[in-house]
Image 1 (tube, protein in one colour):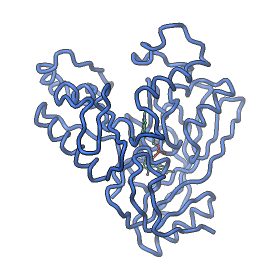
Image 2: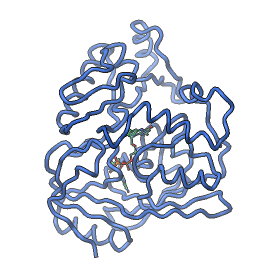
Image 3: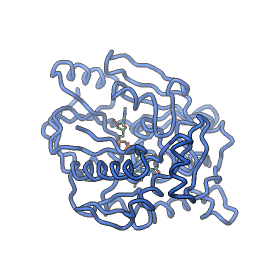
Image 4: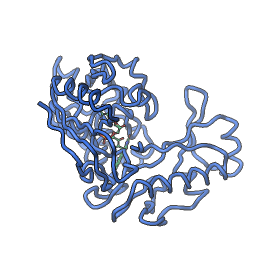
Length: 335
Ligand SMILES: Cc1cc2nc3c(=O)[nH]c(=O)nc-3n(C[C@H](O)[C@H](O)[C@H](O)COP(=O)(O)OP(=O)(O)OC[C@H]3O[C@@H](n4cnc5c(N)ncnc54)[C@H](O)[C@@H]3O)c2cc1C
C-alpha cells in the first residue's frame, strides 16, 4: 500500500535545493501503487507533479498545494544479445551509462554525467555532445494518469525533438514507467563530431576513455553539484527563422549557427547572453552566472524559485528588446 507523506520538504529532491514543501508526497514502485495513486488523485481532487531527480525543475513557491509523485523503481535488464535494454524509469541516467560502459557498450557515453533519472531524460529528450536519448529509444511504457491504463509509445509516437517529446507536450498525463533502448543497433558508437567535445579529444581516444573525458569537461563546466545549486543550462538554444538570423548577424556577424532540417536556424543562446548582455561572471542577488558560460546559472546560498523566475523573465525581456526574438527557458517551473 502506498504511503502518503504530508507537508514534505522538497529541498533534497531538487538540484537548486529550493526549500519548498509539498502538501502530499509519495514514492511509487509497482503497478498496484500507480492504481492507488490514481484513486488518491481522483478522491482528493488535487493537482500532482511527477518528479525525477529534480535536476531540471524549479519550485516557484514555498508550498506546493498538491501531490509530488516520485518513482522508486530502478532495475536495468539487458537482453537480446546486448542489442536492447529494458530500464525502469527511476534509474539514474548516469548509472545506466556506467552500467553499459562496464558491459563494453559505449554508445551512450556522450550522455555521461547528465544529472537526473532516465524518465526525466526521456521527458525532455536530454542530450549532450551530439547525442539525444530519443535517438536510442525503441519504445516507452507509460501509465496514463487520466485513464488508469498502461500504454506503449513507439519512438515515432514519442515525437522527440530538441529538448521535447510527447510527454512534455502532454502536461504530466503520462507517468513514464519503463524505457526500452536499442543500444546495439546504432553505428554512433562514439559520436565525437560535436565540436566542443572534439576540441578536448584531440588525441585518438579509446572508447573506454570517452566517459572519463566527458566527466572532466563537465566537472569544469558545471562544478560540483554537492557544493552548488543549479539546473545547468537555463535556456534552450534558439531556433529562429532565416530573416531573424539575418537581423542578428547584422549586430553579431560572427555568431555560430547550425542549419536545421525544418528550414530554421539554431543559434547558441549563451552567445547572445554574453555578447548582448555581458552577464558572464556577474551576480544578480543570490544567483551567479558562470564566468565561462553565460547559460549556466547557479547559487551557493539559499535561493527561491521566484528569484530564478524573475531573473529569467528579465533576461528574456532584454534579449527580446535587443534582437526581437523569444528565448525559451529549459527549466520547468512548478507552480
Ligand atoms: C549540472 C547540470 C548539467 C546538466 N546538463 C544537461 C545536459 O547536458 N543536457 C540536458 O539535456 N540536460 C542537462 N541538465 C538538465 C537535467 O539534468 C536533464 O533535463 C535531466 O534529464 C532531468 O532529469 P530529472 O530526472 O532530474 O528530471 P526532473 O528535473 O525531476 O523533471 C524534469 C521533467 O521530467 C518529468 N518527469 C520526470 N520523471 C517522470 C516520469 N517518470 N514520468 C513522467 N514525467 C517525468 C517531470 O515531471 C518534469 O517535468 C543538466 C542539469 C544540471 C543540474
